[in-house]
Structures are given as structure tokens and as C-alpha cells.
Length: 476
Ligand code: NAP
Figure (cartoon, rainbow, N blue to C red):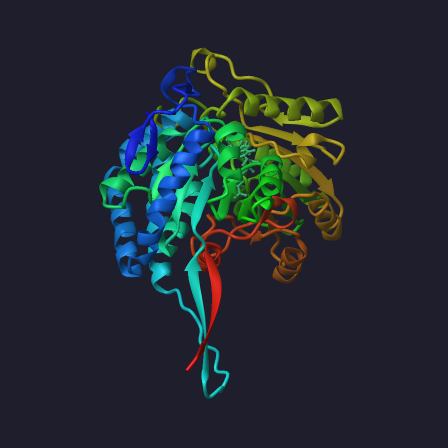
């Protein structure tokens, strides 16, 4: 595939390309241009040229186009899902869910756009009115990671386009294909040339050039904390607005009085879905002494039954990790924990057999008797490995949960709702789930405390991040 700039496919100025691999088989499935600073400049200028007329379109027209994109995406769900499974490895059922959620997000933002309001403060001044209006921030650079390439891009894209901004997207090296397909789909349903452009290539090259470019006014970024800090530093040179969704290393607290039949299924999903490659997954658990052994045994047994394999195979629950680096990180966290005295309860060793030979497969892995001297309890794994630690009481669990620079999400399980709510209030995290874990809703803000982020995505708060407030003083 090529770059998508100004409503057209275009090669990179350099002519260089990068292969895209299927992480389940190691095969090359396509290639994309290795974009550079000149490509970034072309895309940004195209977005800037489209901005004035796009922001002038009535909100209802922008909303109708966004609903049309959602509808077209639903029609082509299987095609997008198959490509997602090929480039990312996630089992097909989960890939279909991502496509559906992307369409829901587009619909949601279209509707939320129709609810946007300005203010006229009642100042009671006879000859003056004060109007507080909201304006689109301008050209937006949207940089997405590999793990949910469509939905994580749409947190930015859906909010930016409905508010009247235009967008240059930079997908991850590993998963650029579905983003390019999405840009073409938007063009086909009637979005004007330049409203949604995509450049591919390395974050350190074309991504950095986009962040440094003087024209964009905002960066919407999801990715690791290290890259987020680099981007924030570069964006500060031109005082760009920022929304940063960064790394997570999320704790779950399971109290003695938790109902394990209730707690185990969601904790299992939240630990191993997408092979552990999502930001608000459970990386570590603090379990009260009274139920520690029972919990560990039941959790490890359930983890051991999850089916790992090529995501195209029906019934498969965990696909491969996206690349060798991510795969090695899981292995490193297991070795480090075992070296420091942890006990291996499930997984931990590379899967063998024909299906696994050429892909980056790692089994669901449960480590017991961990502590904060181990990487599994302090660094983001981004793979299917979890650490269990025994604690005496809730205060100790909360202290451990907060003993981290991260603050994306936390999870609490207790039948005592007063204790659970107090624990939720004390957890330093942008979202806390109590006694169940389900998806994060489009209507609710999502984002991190501390080094896990800046600003919020989704909900009306996420939409407001793509708007500037302007105060107009009007003398009559
Ligand atoms: P990553 O390595 O930080 O990359 C994310 C994106 O940023 C990629 O498109 C990457 O391009 C680009 N990039 C990297 N350095 C850049 C730079 N200096 N300037 C501009 N762009 C740059 O993250 P990842 O490995 O793809 O994703 C995993 C991370 O994302 C995890 O830490 C996870 O927690 C985080 N995440 C956070 C959330 C959230 O909502 N908080 C959600 C999902 C994921 P290349 O691919 O070319 O390197």
C-alpha cells in the first residue's frame, strides 16, 4: 500500500518501503512507504489546505459523514477484521469486535458533536455581550500504537473530525494496513481530500517530523511512556496541545471476602486478552492472605486452559505477540521473576510445535510469590504474564498498588462495598473497576494519572480536547 495524502494514494518521496509481517507466521503480507520529513510536510499541508472549508461545514453535515463512515465500516467488517488479524495476530473474533467498536466510536462522536455548546455569561452589562465560543484546534497529528490500531486511532480521529479539525495519522510500523484502508473508506464516503491523511514509516523519523512541524496545533498520542515523553518535549517547542495516553502497569486487589466465582473470569480476561497487549491490562495482583492459595491455584488452572494459536484458527483465544521485541520482554520478565524467587504456576516457556515455530507465541503465564524487586511488578510487560503477591491487609495492597510511576487503571474485588469504594478512591489511577471488569465506555473519560498520560480521551471531555475556547467581547 502507499501513503494516503489529499484523498489519493501516493508513494513516499524517498521511494523506500518497509515490510509488514504476519506475526503468526513471519510471512511478509505487504509493504508500506518509509515516510520521511518531506512526506510529513506534504500530508500536513494537505490537512491545512482542507481545514478552513472543513471547519466551516455545518456540524450536522460533518456528523452525517461520520455516521456514513461508521456504516461503511460495518458493511466491510469482515474485510477489515481479516486484515487486522493478519497484521496484528489477534484472533478473528476479537478483530471483528474492534471493527464494530470503531464504528460505534464514530457514531458516538458524531452524536456528541451535535451536543456541543458555547456560553454567553449573564454579566448584565447594558452595552456589551460576552460570547464564549469553541473552535477546532486546527490540524491534528494522531499517532497510534499497534495493539488496537483502529479504535485507538479513532479516539483521536472521531473527536478531531467532528469538531472541525483535519488529521494526519501515523500508525505503528507493525500495523499500518487497516489505518490506510480506513483513510480510503473515509474518502469513499465523501470526506473531502485532506481531511484524513495517513503517513507510514518510523516513529523516530516521520512521526518526529510531524510532531516538530510548525503547522499542526495538536498531537493526540497513544503509546509507551518513553515515546510520549519524547513527543511532549518536541511538541513543547511549538507549544502544541497534547493528549497523551501512555503506558500502564495496572494492579488488581483481591480481598479475603471477594467472591472468586465473580472475580476470576474478568481478571482472566483483563490479564490475557489480546495476549496481554493492552494498556489497562492487569500486570500484577495483590491478594489477601486468607484466599491467596485458593485464588492462585484456580487462576493458574484457568490460565493454563486458554487456547493459543494462529488467530485465523477458529476457537483460538490468544494469538501471537506482535513482534520479537514484545515477545522477548515477556520472556525477560519471567526469567527475572524466577531469578528473584517467584514460583511459576502456569506457562513461562516458549510454545513448541508446528503452529508456533515461526510466530511470536507466548503462553499465558502466572507467577506467584512475587515482590517489588521484580520487573513483573514494576515495569509494563505488555504480554501474557502476570505476578501474584500475597498481602496481609487492604492498606498494604493499596500502598503496593500506588507504588509506581504509572496510574492508568486499577481493579478492586471485595464484597464489602464500603471498603471497595474507599480503596477505589485511594487508588492513583484514571479508571478503577470494582467487582467486575468490562470495557471502558465511549461516554466515560479514559486516561491516566501520573506518567500514564495527560488529558482524557472519549466522552465529551475527550471531545473538548480538540477545541479551543475563544472569548469574544462584543460592544453593542
Ligand atoms: P510505542 O513504541 O510508544 O509507539 C507508539 C506509536 O508512536 C507508534 O506509531 C510509533 O511508531 C510512534 N513513535 C514512537 N516514537 C516516536 C517519536 N519519537 N515521535 C513520534 N512518534 C513516535 O508504543 P507501542 O509499542 O506501539 O504500543 C505499546 C505502548 O502503548 C504500551 O506502553 C501501552 O501501554 C501503550 N498504550 C497506551 C494506551 C492508553 O490508552 N494509555 C493504549 C494502548 C497502548 P513506530 O511504530 O514506528 O515505532
